Image (cartoon, rainbow, N blue to C red; front, side):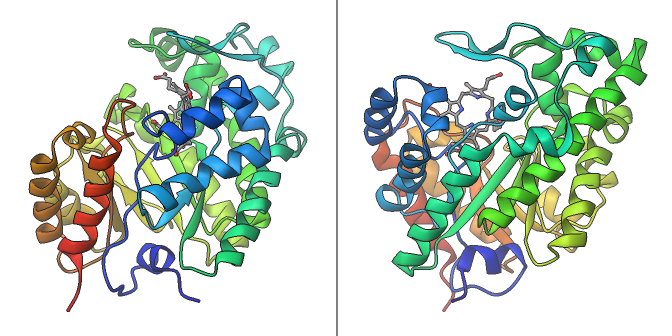
Length: 347
Ligand code: 1CP
C-alpha cells in the first residue's frame, strides 16, 4: 500500500499534492475540546494514549487531511528529562526551575534513560499504527520533536519569550554551557525519534519554531548542526523513513541549508518561489499558506492556486506556514484541504 503522503515526502509522483496542517488537532475543533475537557487538562491528554490517539485521528475524519500528526507536545522531552512542567491558562507552558548553570544541567536525566520515560508517546503511536492499518486507507502518521535549540529556549527561559534574552545572552557570554545543554538534548531527541519510528510512525518532523531568534551567522552553530546530527543518526539506521525539517523564519539561511533530510518546511514569511529556487532541486518543499488566510475562503483559494501554480512540477506538500489558530471556522479548514486537492489534481 503506497501512502500518498510518504511518496510525496520521497519526491515520487502522486495523483495530487497531499495536505496536512500544523497544529491540526486542536482547539478549533469542538470534538477536540470535548476530549480535552474529559482529560481535565492538556498534559493529562498527552499522557493518556487512548485519548491522545482519538484526537490525533480527528482531523483525518473531520477535515480530510492526508496525514495525522501524533498528538503530544514538544515539551514532554524536557519534562521527562526531569523538569517539572505546567501549562498555565493564559500564560502557556512553564518550567518552574529553568536551566541556567552547569549544575542545573547535571541534575537532568539524559540520553536513552530520558527517552525511555516517554512510554505514553510510544503507546499512543502503537494504538494509532494499529488503527490506521486496520482502516487500510493511505493516511500516514507523522511523529515529531522540537529541535534542540527550540527546546533549549523553554528550558533556559522557563517559558515562552518575546526577547529570548536569557538564552541569547548565553550564545555570546557562555556558549560552552549552551553547547552542553544542546548536546544533552540532542542525545535524548535521537533516541526519542528512534523510538517513535520503532513504535510505528511513517515520517518524522523536527520543529525549530524559534529558529528566527538566532542571527543567521550563528544559526548553524547553535541549531542547524544539532538538527543534522539527529538526521544523520536516524538516516544511518532508518534510511527509508522520511524526515521533515521546519526551521521557522530563517530566509537568510536558505543559501546555507545542508543535510541528508527529505522535506524542507517553508514558513509563511518566505516566498515559496524563493524556497523553490534555492532548495527545490534538493528537497521536497512543504507549506506555506499564511495561517490567517484560513479566516477567508477567498483568501484560501487565492493562495492555494498560487502555490499549486508555483509548485506545478510537484515535489510539494501543502501545509500552513505555521500553526492553525483556535478561532478558525472548521468549515474553512475543510475548504483549504479540498482546494489543495482540487488545484493540484493531475490529469
Ligand atoms: O489545549 C490546549 O489548550 C493546549 C494547546 C496546545 C496544543 C493543542 C499546546 C500547548 N500544545 C498542543 C499540541 C501540539 N504542540 C502538537 C500536536 C497537535 C497538532 O499539531 O495537531 C504539536 C505538533 C505541538 C508542537 C509545539 N508545541 C511546538 C512546535 C510547533 C509550533 O507551533 O511552532 C511548540 C513551539 C510548542 C510549545 C507549546 N505548547 C503549547 C503551546 C501553547 C506552545 C507554544 C507556547 C509559546 O508560544 O511559547
